[in-house]
Amino acid sequence: MKLRELFREGRFVVTSEVGPPKGTDVTEMLANAELLRPWVDGLNITDQQSSVMRLGSLAAAHLLKERGIEPIYQLTCRDRNRIALQSDLLSAWALGIENVLCLTGDYVSLGDHPEAKPVFDLDSVSLLATAKRLNEGYDLAGNELVGKPDFCLGAVVTPGANPLEMQLIKMERKIAAGAEFFQTQAIYEPEKFARFMAEAKELKRPVIAGIILLKSAGMARFMNKNVAGVHVPEPLIEEMERAKDRVAKSIELAARLIREIRPLCQGVHIMPIGWERHVPAVLEEAGLARRR
Amino acid sequence: MLVSERKPLEEILGLLEREGRRRLFILGCNGCAAASGTGGEPEVLELKEELERAGKEVVGWKVLDFLCQKGLIRAGLRPYEKELAAAEAVLAATCGIGVQAVAAVLEEPVYPACNTISLGGVRGEWPGAERCLECGQCFLGLTAGICPLTACTKQLVNGPCGGAKEGRCEFEPDARPCGWELIYERLKKQGRLDLLRKSPPIFKDHAKMQPPKRLRQTTRWAVELEEVARR
Ligand code: SF4
Ligand code: SF4
View 1 (cartoon, each protein chain N blue to C red):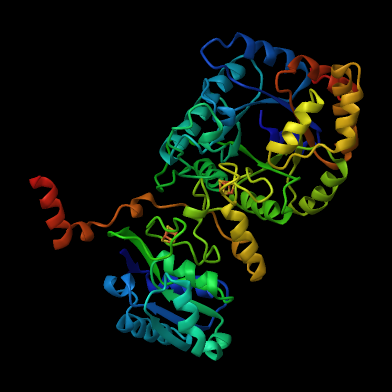
View 2 (tube, chains in turn cyan, red):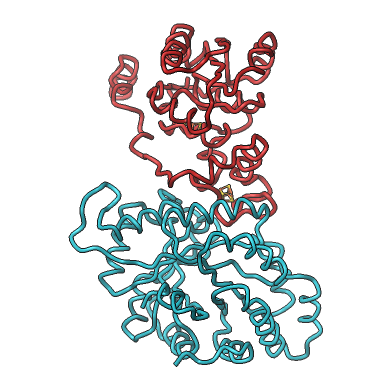
């Protein structure tokens, strides 16, 4: 099922994500996916997030699809050139994968193989254009395909970026290249997000707001210092710091945020970062019922 | 020596017309560009004629000794203030480093007339940073004279990644500004953000990053290969 169909029906889309393991044992990843399944419309499969070498997102997406969980296949330009990216996209379609999130990818130095060759033959914009070209039945060299995919293509945007104008320009270019929907970097400030949505509305593409569960005040401070485009406001950090029950507070904060931004956007994407087990409580408290 | 070749006239005209530039000032370089047969006086005059035939007005031209030296550019262009003020764009027939140095000195939008295709020995004379990878499809006309291949760690040509924090690159933030923020700021200052906004997806051509066969077939190259083979 393509996310585009849900947006078309006017549904408020709920997605989350799972990360493939370092190694071949997929038990935990599948258990997390099963736990999230009743609550979401689809699950992102990260592509060697933060440049840490792991089992591939293509294989993992296939394993979810096999179990009837809708995968949103993340694909980055960090490790593959245009030949490999096109090939993986064709493989994905042959395996029944219908939603793809196209990303540039982190620099290799962020991960555990900093000596690796950074590829970046393509980037988010040209990858979207490439996938669209495949959808149209041709490869980048202009050769006609025997059997073509029909991917629903997504991209990312950072509402908290400074300068925001550059983000909006890139968003516009991604749309021109083929992006049908957007997922955002984690947001914590509804007012800032509202300002972004006021600008982004003109671009007329569904936006799924990114939510990262805050596990502690320390994590918030770390993100403020190190993660691009993410800002947790100080009062929120203090609220977290004062809380006796960190888990309960985290759930409360995330649910409150979702309720506040729900009228502004077309969906939410929860990034649990290890707290998959608490995602159902967040969604329940936010008033987002089970999907099935 | 940075070896360059002239961009096809249609490409230069395309760049200029996209932003409606008609009145031009042409700059040549007596260094590597003259040696490459792309930016000496004869080539500049030829380019001038081609442009005029295509309906452009060339309000002035000058061949300076080394366009990779900002001091020389400043001094050399002092007598041409009037012409520069009348020009809507500066076209630099030189290597990627020369174009960037000119763009760093002048307020006017600067366009490359050449592609830099090989580092035939020594790099240009603008010390302090690596500025050209001899990519063979010079993008400087789209990026306000800042090279996206050297200023951006990931060598992105379609805009920034999401990794910059407070204007610094996600790789070595203490040492590297985000190249795309520099490009954004300069384009914005020049009122040229539409160039970025309206650009169709750009694909790099890695085939052009290899020095072309004709360079490998020069006598100098042959002599050097011969030397290597003999040792
Ligand atoms: S875009 Fe950069 S690498 Fe390519 S020729 Fe121009 S200055 Fe050199
Ligand atoms: S942060 Fe800026 S310079 Fe660094 S890779 Fe991203 S776009 Fe390029």
